[in-house]
Amino acid sequence: MVNHQSKIYEQLLKISDEQKQQDCFTLLDLMAEITGEEPKLWHGQMIGFGSYSYKYNSGREGEWFLTGFCPRKNNLVIYIVAGFKAYDEILADFGVYKTGSSCLYINALKDIKMDKLKLLIEKSVQHMRTKYNIKV
Image 1 (cartoon, rainbow, N blue to C red):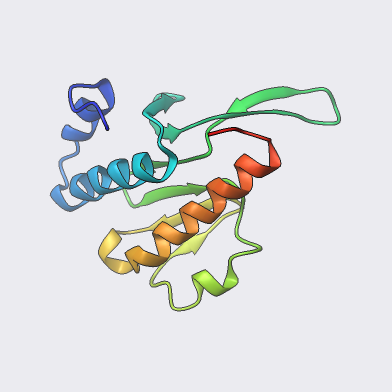
Image 2 (image 1 turned 30 degrees about the vertical axis):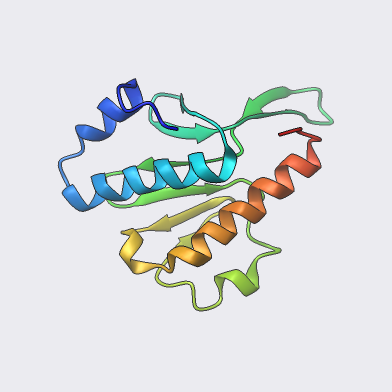
């Protein structure tokens, strides 16, 4: 499903750390499979899948991806846009990670359980599609 001649693919080929590069290709394929969407570059470095539009009470509007990731120098950031509050059971015995409000920080995919990561991404994407009435 992912166009391996794309700008994103070329960008990932430039990652010098072989493990991180392979992890990124794994995430690229996993997120494309889960969302059924092609990847898109957001803000230059973030690789996102799908999108939704939001509007705050203040009137501010925007668009964001349903899930995505970003390779950084020290880690990989996986975006679980729905946040983590409803996913304690999935995160139990998940592996080595840290979280922010919607960011899952890992050093490598080998440090976490892939079946749980897949489930976490699936649940988050499902939640966002339901919340924003996104038809697949």
